[in-house]
Length: 390
Ligand code: KIV
Ligand code: ZN
Image 1: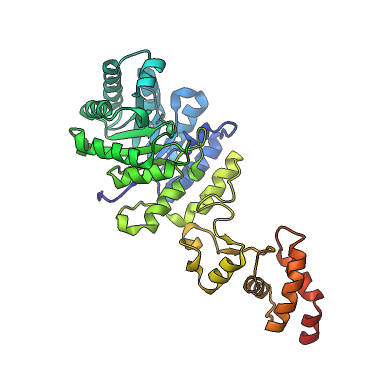
Image 2: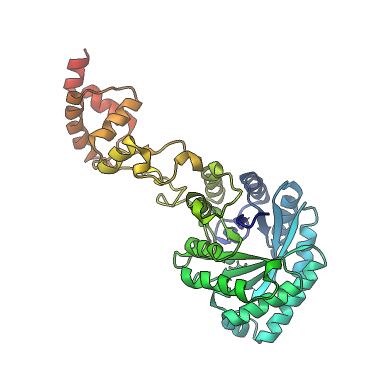
């Protein structure tokens, strides 16, 4: 694997599914997992097998059908969790156990009523035990975002020695600033003995709207895996959005970091996840929102009609959207009206356009959006159009 490849670890079916009221059944999970595999993700986190018989069944069923991606199951640093995950993953072509424990002082004190040395011992024990089932073991240092860097480095060093192949550095509470998260990854790269034997992974939550920025800072500073979900769904304000990090790396080639994602599938898979979970995607959502390629102000419409790149940095076809939308509202100009009229078969002269534009504005003031039927009616009712055309 070349060093500029960023692995995409999709956790839509685990962290993403933690959205209240969005539980998926096994059939729905299988359909999504299959699409994720075709999309080209490197790892599919299929669930948390010990959490329920249904989750166990889903992880097992996904393990049986996935052809390319590594299938991963989450555990706590608890023997039984790890044993159950190994059992659920036994049919996977490539299996990974994802185990870990909280490392911030607040987790150590309040969650575990423990101390730093004991946490390191538990972490090492969990990784060694997971290693007895699978070669590929990812360790997460929960709340790494609020864990002091010296201690985090000691934890990482110990679990690498125990055989961890991937080190997940979660900003569990979405607290870090991008500069802080990037510096954390850099610190680990520079201070953990044996770090070259493992891949550093970014797992950022979006409580302050910084998940995507933090993940990008992470890979700029040496991480080579991003944990993310389709549409950025997940616990509370969600996780890093897969489509965002993938397109950022694609649109900024000078970063020299890329992924194996077939970006033309992004819009379709976004719709699949949103329909299956019954979660509406906000219209202004980057990359996959309904308005991501829609232009409604006259100035922008005129620019896009002349040359798409004036107001678009992504070709909509690159993410599976057929074309940019020129939306007609009371803010639209003549260029947009002429363009939309032409799309439904009317080639308007300048004189016709001037008159029809006035009727269009009167009509548009009464309606949020003017559709093809409305344009048709406005044109057919127009005196000047009928006089000149007959
Ligand atoms: O946010 C987090 O810390 C997690 C871990 C369980 C990986 O989801
Ligand atoms: Zn998480």
